[in-house]
Image 1 (cartoon, rainbow, N blue to C red):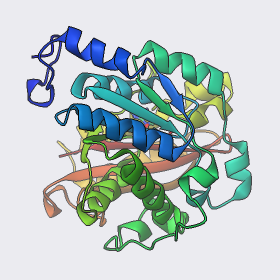
Image 2 (cartoon, helix red, strand yellow):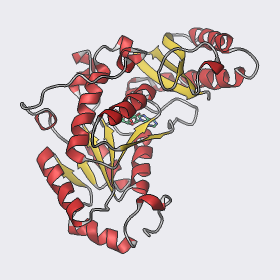
Image 3 (spheres, protein in one colour):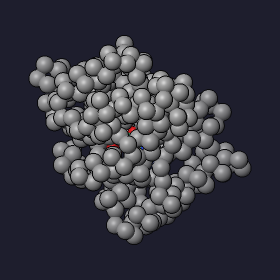
Length: 312
Ligand code: AMP
């Protein structure tokens, strides 16, 4: 078995040398590929050569930070070959201005990907993801796309599903890695995987936080240094809420968290809700669902900051 591998069930190489030889043969010490056909041809030939090879995929929009890197490390550990995509997908942005403001530090991203041993960076242009022959689909998402984030961002999750559908089709990964940070996205991605004939296993990894608690995000670049420090109040509120439900009911705990956040200068609550982790419906009691999480978006210094905590 492949040494240094925690999950032996997914490692199919007899030894490390064999894997290194294999990677060398295909010259994929961080191959940067821009054309979809080139990527699918390369991966197909790798699979032909070794049908047992496992491919891990980490979709991102770039401006990479330790949150992204934790997904990549998970993929590198679990899979023989890791593909990361950087593509700022226009179909999931409502406002053009938001899309244009999105940071694009590609050279730094490439350096970080090399450091975490990513094998392939897929860096497509719009036409490679959505060729003229592609018809945008409307996926049946059991209303998941209209709830919570979907309510304030119409069309967002259909955009997410279209881009994931294309990536899954091009890459045919065994695993796709998503951060719990975007909680609703993980639920939608799992449903999309159920709808597709050939879909990866969806792996969800924990939220990476700054030392003081703020969830890492590419959007944090837009916060001032002071704002970045202050914004730790979001995690403090969520953490406290989780402790409070031992002593008070969920409604009271939510109310207390809302009051705490509203008292922070410049903070505006977009939403702070307790939800069923499968249906995403709002719950009023911890006993209302098998899994319960609190999801929130706080507007602070003009930035929408997403966070969540699983209660059970
Ligand atoms: P993005 O580039 O924002 O589309 O994010 C790409 C992936 O990284 C998504 O699956 C996110 O949920 C995940 N991600 C973003 N921030 C974090 C974080 N702080 N911790 C863990 N995963 C994250």
